[in-house]
Amino acid sequence: MSFNKITLVGYLGRDPELRYTPQGTAVCKMSVATTERRKNVVGNIEEHTTWFRVTVWGRQAELANEYLAKGRQVYLEGRLRLVEYADREGNPRISPDVTATDIQFLGQRNEMPASVHPSQVEQPDIILTGLPLEPAKFGSSQTAAKPVINRRTGNQSLVSIEEDDIPF
Image (cartoon, rainbow, N blue to C red; front, top):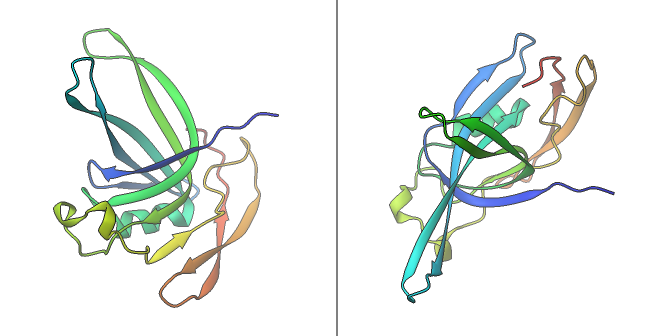
């Protein structure tokens, strides 16, 4: 058995970018930063920031584009893939890419990033779970309907997401 799952709580480094495939499937790309503090050899505290490129598919991509902006905090789960590339000087680099499967928007929609403190984070307004966010197989024509739950109202609605046949 094999398993690939990552959980992140971080802040958006820029506004999400929403695009559509030729078949009409929404694709949202964003960058999320996580920061951890740890002591170095001397005993001084250092901050280490890791940037993740995140891709979200379908209706969840449209909602992420609508509700998220640079500086907003987000909780997400997904699959991690490490992509190797060469930078402008030709040096080899590795970039962590995440295909998100579940997203929760943390804090209030109108909160400014500086006012968010981990002890003050409230329940998210919208929770999106179980959405198929990436095409299952190249050339697949499956259609799926999964629930989207609005936490404020408790209403649940089904969202149909067309699979596309363009690999990214």
